[in-house]
Length: 69
Image (cartoon, rainbow, N blue to C red; front, side, top):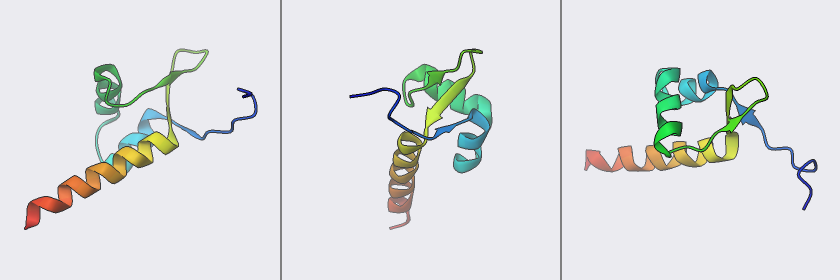
């Protein structure tokens, strides 16, 4: 398995925050709490795998829809 062969899309904290409609600092707290894994850039900035974010977003949407019944 080649690390360089993978082309995972990485999102910034601001991009993740806009998807969840929360503050970017909340996304950072989620990463520190282990709810979302992050990758650090050479400059020390956090990036998040789009596939993982989309999966978490789908799970959040599923659980929020159940409370209406």
